Length: 246
Ligand code: NDP
Image (tube, rainbow, N blue to C red; front, side, top):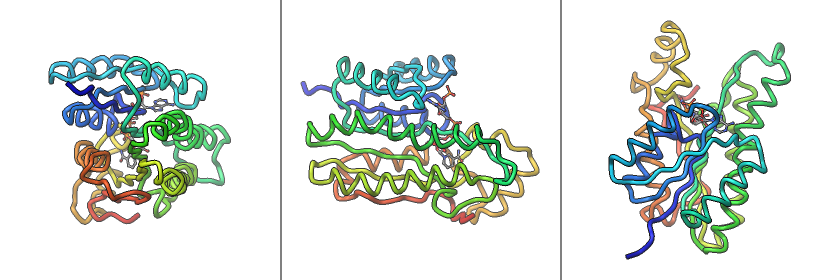
């Protein structure tokens, strides 16, 4: 019997990351995911995956902490095996006009959304290069592709993720490692659930398909990208946004 494939998902306890954990577990991966603080969400997800006959291991790790993230990946590789797939979904927003933006709102967003991707990918990709195989999917955003007012911090972090993805794809392709970015539009998770009804309605009118995306629609794309079906795809950015261009 061959050993199960191993996937790492940052920010896996809620939203898009959660849907990715469920989907990759159904695809036959043993999934290690991390989250920042919501232990209940992580436990519920672990149980749900177990009931589906899969394995998901949730660990509280803040991706802004370089050492803690590296230690988590070390432990996971030792216990489950080296990662074959990595999905970086941990992300936050702290919106506001640049002219009034407090420094912590800038640095926390960059630290989580961009530095966090480096903290996860560096030790994981090191192992993928040794294995001569692997696939990384980073979560960017429509805001990173097109820019969005009141999101200079978020847009900068998500544009940074695209540059990171393209550069890394060129660096590691010859070792059989693929790297792609997914740039969602408005997906119905807690991240946009915090909006008022008026703001949501206004946004809906800007989406040609007239609905928010679902997290499992993003997970479907991620599942494809980490699979052998996408063996010739690397360095690409996939927009999944119902036609929305902010
Ligand atoms: P959610 O807010 O629903 O979930 C965020 C997840 O990331 C949670 O599991 C959270 O854990 C975790 N997380 C946040 N900060 C950290 C941290 N420092 N260390 C570890 N884990 C952390 O977000 P979404 O699912 O909506 O978004 C997922 C990704 O997709 C993000 O990168 C986001 O920028 C991107 N995206 C989302 C869009 C949307 O419309 N929803 C649109 C475009 C892009 P905990 O709950 O424990 O804090």
